[in-house]
Image (cartoon, rainbow, N blue to C red; front, top):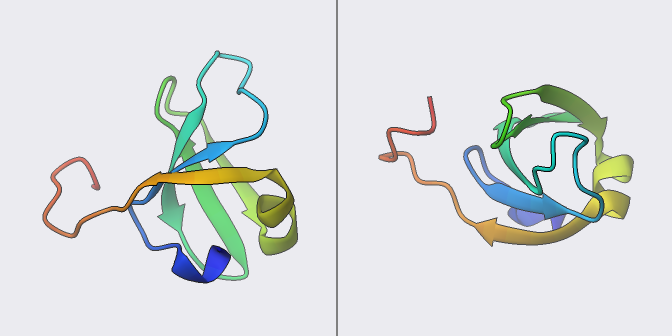
Length: 70
């Protein structure tokens, strides 16, 4: 499932962020994956193993033409 991740994808993790947000945008790909909470804008970095364990589903695929994907 992690092989399918691209920049701008929106993912849902198993537990909610303390702000109540459930969805995160992928902002960095590499050895670590950068995620940004869509509710509060907080950014976190997870290694691939941690993300694989926490990932529930890919909500929607990002698009290069999407203006939200700064």
